[in-house]
Amino acid sequence: MVLIKNSFDIDIMLSQTDSSGRLLLFKALIKEENYTIANIYGPNKDAEAVQFYHKLSKLLRTNDSGNEENIIMGGDFNCPLNINLDKKGGIQIPRRHVIKSIEEIQDEFSLHDIWHIKNPNQQSFTWGRCSPFVFCRLDYWLISHKLHDLVTSVDILPSIKSDHSAVFLELKEIKENNRGPSYWKLNTTLLANEEYKKMIIDKLPNIWLEEAKDLRDRRSIWDWIKFNIRNDSIIFSKRLLQIRQKHERELTNKYHESLAAFQDNPCDNMRITMERYKSELESMYDKKVEGL
Image (cartoon, rainbow, N blue to C red; front, side, top):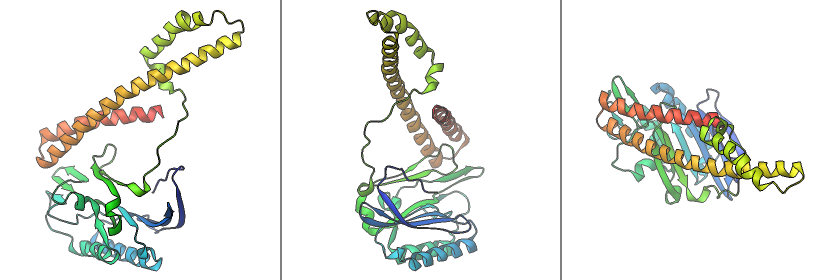
């Protein structure tokens, strides 16, 4: 699927899928520029993969999508394109027919593997397994030559809840605008936080009611209490968020480093360290979901 924020300035002019659920292609107008965007999930079997990529090439030609200079194609291609850089361990035999069919699309529509261009000699993988140790880069962003200079960031982000890592791509011309002021509401998970509950219990009689002692209308007292609860809850939430974000950044960095070390030297000790950090991050994300 492709998720698009409601606030994003985009007009979908054409959308197509295939019956097997391996392709979502759409033409869109973004900031007065035409884009063709394709989401790919390539087959594992060679014959099916070759047929799929030939079908994709034909679809791009049929809809004149390939005539656009702004093509962004991403997803799980299920095939290492460069056996020396994109695979470690396992059988080191390239899937020549599949690679050839993908390269034909790249040549015909001037598409380039942007991560490889930005990291020409670096080995980094988007999928792996531990028994036996095998690592592959299977997930790609193939983009038009014209878009290269617009890329502000491209990175491989280690996975948390998936067996595939995310490949992050940002283009400055279609970057989301800065957010304005947001709407605040109480995250009810705070009600299980002992420090938060103590703050409310201490401040209610000793500060807020004391400050409201000259108010005669009970509704005004009640509004004053709610006003203070809201203000102090926002301050408490922000402090809690800063602590949590700092811990998440530190944990994410440790996970990234341990994953890179594991891919460089696959052994059980490295795997155990990497999986420990991953498990801690998963617990953190579970709490985020609970909060939502």
